[in-house]
Length: 406
Image (tube, rainbow, N blue to C red; front, side):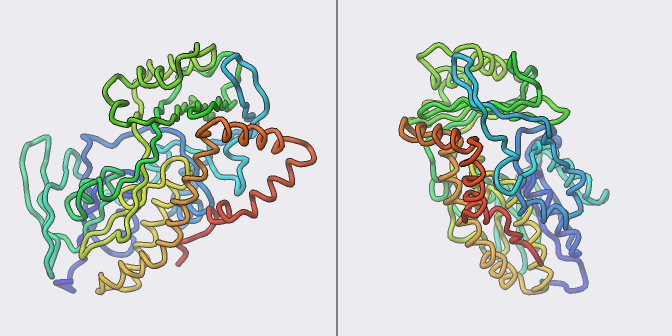
């Protein structure tokens, strides 16, 4: 650090879960974070998010667990359905091993944001356009997109928490093509204004077919969230038409039937939605000199893993711990942070690819395997045995690891 008589200054890029958690943790250890966000205001709402034990432990240390809450309903029932409307018992997300909490992304972001000190500086409509580093500082040129102005400021650390298509990563680590790994799947996500007719508000639904699936995630005291997930051989072509047209094409040419038709209408009428290709971010190194990447910018696990929110908070928590433990020695702090976190994240990346089969079977063989598993999982005698086997599997045990424990 250049001046030991002042607080070290950090630029946090992105006001999502990772960025807000990083700003909170940095302030807790005596740093002076400045947060910049591309959007003109903080975004509320969001869609379904699972919070496993890794995230629960971190949220507790950050002091936001109670505010995040749990939107799981004890009266919820999950159903496997088909286009004709037939239904059978499924598995609720909260019934998975470890009993993950269910939340909206906005629940987590809002809880973290409310925990920030009132005097912490947040600049909206602001993006980095150039980052230069030397022994003294990271010199960052920031553009105010609303005012059309640019300023260059010095920071001791830059935290890139600006998502899968991170601007910070492109500026410092190179083009997206070097780091994004396509899974050849698409997702379309929105909140629903009306539950599928014939189902209760707290009911969850899954329609799984070879290469495509549709999910309804139910919440307590909130409208459900829907997810379309499908395999594609041409990601670029998916973006050449309206999102609803891509959804209809992916689930055709068969007639959608009453359930799928309702979900398509709900997506088409949604005021806010997410439509994107599914990529993992795979990098050998998440930091370079005074710049560090965090969350989806560094290790996007995809929603199939269920660990995106948990690892974003845990990564931020651990970053603060290592910076405090190795105060005044930034290279050592960042090396120690990555050394502990990297094996854990590598496992979650591998697990995310496997978990995709639960969300969307790739072909008829995987669909058959999934159907058999669902029937056995709900069988009176075999079901408890399978549940115990899942709980003892490495994939689910790793979702309970408190990787950021001091």
